[in-house]
Length: 144
Image (cartoon, rainbow, N blue to C red; front, side):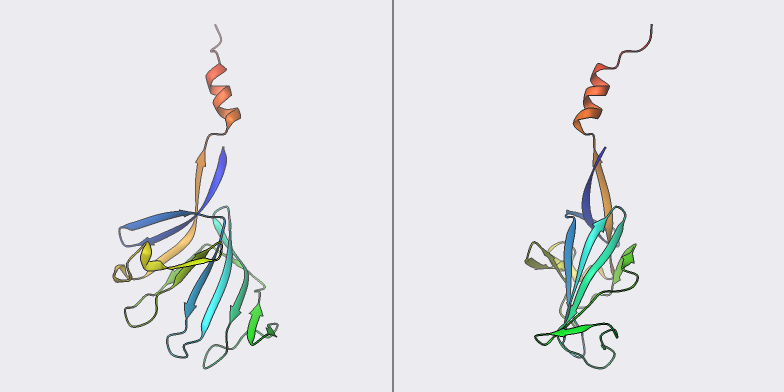
């Protein structure tokens, strides 16, 4: 079987799978109005945070000690980048999360409305038979 990587979104009874092997989660701090970008790679049933950026700092938003400043943006990675899921609180009173694929960003509301409430973002794995599996199943003859 050949795996097809996808990002899964779930909120209540709503479930969406978006084919992608990497993405950026973009969001804005609700009080400080500072933008964050988190880059993820879909690795099997896991999400790996490959890098993150903060466009400023403020109360409760200090970059990690090993972060570096480049053109006014803090860049960092985490010692433990692996996540099974991201639980995202959403509200009509703050800007919604955005998902970016290949440099194009769209509000998460494009897939799941904010009114659906807390949204869980995770890796999902879809499989399909590869050519070898199909040939084997078509040519296999039972023993007589």
